[in-house]
Image (cartoon, rainbow, N blue to C red):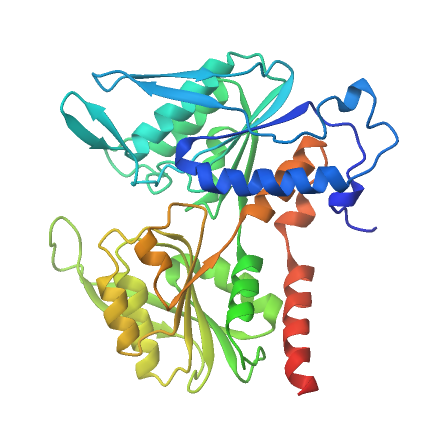
Amino acid sequence: MAQATTKDLTTLPVGRLGLIPLISCKDLGEKVNEWLIQWRKERSHEELDSFAFEGYQRESYLIPVQTARFGSGEAKCTIMESVRGDDIYLMVDVCNYSLTYSIGPYENLMSPDDHFQDLKRVIGAIGGKARRVNVIMPYLYESRQNIRSGRESLDCATALQELVSMGVENIITFDAHDARVQNATPLHGFETIQPSYQFIKALLNHEKGLHIDNDHFMIISPEGSMNRAIYLANILGVDMGMYYKRLDYSKRINGRHPIAAYEFLGPNLKGKDMILIDDMISSGDTVLKISSLLKERGAGRIYICSTFGLFTNGLEKFDEAHKAGVFDKLLTTNLIYQSPELLAKDYYISCDMSKYIALIIDTLNHDQSVSYLLNPVDRINRCVSNYMAQYDEK
């Protein structure tokens, strides 16, 4: 069966498409909107003039909202146009630390909690009038607090239950820290999407002379990212390796067992180029340590790929590591806020996810399956084949 494309979406839409990117996701939302405008202007259908396709082709799918703040720091949301009967897609970046609001004479940085509250305010302003409400939350709120150990809160599960209780039907996220958290809302849609294709595409567009085969290339991951590494290694037909942290259980420092050593499991990697993949970079200590150990083992070029670049301790250590030859390129997505400082780095490659998100929205609006979009094996193979063919010709 032929796979659906943006040209094949001829079923009736669920409702008039509406896109509401919160201010935290403004730039990404605008890019998604541009793709949707372009595709729908190019698309032809014999019933486009019927009432079922009312509002299908528009100058913009963005619905303006205002999230005003009172002097006390409290807030409210106002939707500036009717959304009755619409198929709404909300976009929020809970990691955007560049935004502020005033509390009396002070400026307060917006935290993930603030962004999540704004998301709920928009849903509250919709007030059940939309045909369907979908939330696109690239970095899943509180996803690192997804399991309970002892007397702890279970924040991610609680947040998901809050959203579905407010009427959200589908939650779309990327590279969830642990996808099993969807068990908190088993009767509602939940998709966690991997940006594997975008990593490969961006890397091959920027780097020359790579040989993607088992003799020259590898995939490496920390122990927590084994599934990501296995997936890519299988598609590319290359070997993989893993680093795991061996902890010293005889000691506790700041309530945690310190790392005794990093142990490597895998084949000989001398001279091979490799992707070092993980779901997020927080401080960066783990990926930089692993990268330096790989270099000690004779690794060739090292490309660090991470869906979310948080860089909580700044970029100075990455500058130093790159200067010392610890890694060659750093790739993260634009799913969360990227600082101007990061974008200016010569070793940084940004992976644009706007077209992918637009494809998902366009497909879901027609109530069609997104399975082929979630498993991009054919696209990755085609991308690699085209890349290798350039060098075969030369």
